Image (cartoon, rainbow, N blue to C red; front, side, top):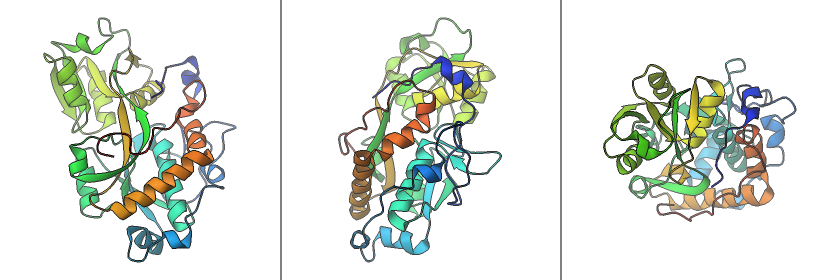
Length: 305
């Protein structure tokens, strides 16, 4: 895992823009000089016809002509709807678009806005084909869904209102009211690191940020990737300390679809070896993080993957 350090450049970066809900490539670059999502995916791999097995999930998606992704519309740098173009932009959004191109031959994606409480149900009932949504792989979740990957690693960090003092590490949360997303790994992590903390939960990242700003808790514990993006967008909050967990993101799939899981893992291997994964990272998360793209995590390297 490479820590997403807050850097001075963050303040200069405007709200990020990425790929299309509709599958078009008209979105503006994330940062002036950065490639459009369509350009980024111009040389993205496409599966051989023999890989689209008869009767498979892949064949169903290809016939439909669109990959349906459970994701976010409000997660900067990851999966956020551009208010001007209407396009969905970010690291997770472009990964979904790259998978669509691999299956269909074109990066046609439909984003279904999902919450942490609804992802398992959306996969189980077939509303979405995959979930790209900072979906941390855990053995408990793996009993309900299948996970391809991991495709990225991050970790839980702490955000506070700017100029808050006395909170720099998880243990400092003891005896305080702490905000967390509902049904996220932050809840057991807080209980373990700060057993005397009082936890209040909200359904989405923007709701949690708003609760922090309204003093409904003195700190917000969330994946560092999201918190850095939140702090980039809203300078009234800041991320303190370093990540205190290691959280591998998985691509959520319907439970038991081993054929599709192998297919997605094969695609992920190709995106990493071709350098596409690294280019997607540089075009999104890498716009606010110093240095080169981190090494992708090893596929199948964590329990539940």
